[in-house]
Image 1 (cartoon, rainbow, N blue to C red):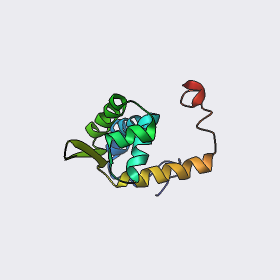
Image 2 (image 1 turned 45 degrees about the vertical axis):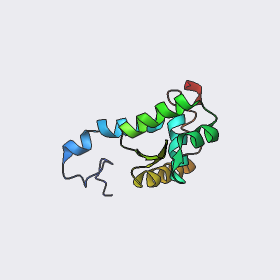
Image 3 (image 1 turned 90 degrees about the vertical axis):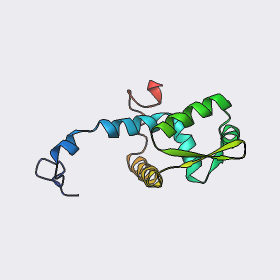
Image 4 (image 1 turned 180 degrees about the vertical axis):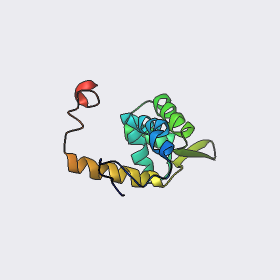
Length: 124
């Protein structure tokens, strides 16, 4: 990634793409909910039925289903029927790369994000 003298990226061919962050903001908001993030992490390990996720997460079926619907509507997970059950999987394998990059960034910044008064644990 090339940086110019002001410290901003200079390899964007279209400044509008750089300036329009609404889609990225929506992506990160969809992953910003701890329950949805936990679901995505479980699905990164393989396909799961709703009942399996409720057991893993210790949450009600309606709660898990609502979060899965959000993730499905965002295009992050897909669902297929298996008998009478619904099996969920990651729709985009790139999501695993994003999670790994986030873990790397968190490792580099330590607890700074969790201490943020707006987004950290104190804000919850």
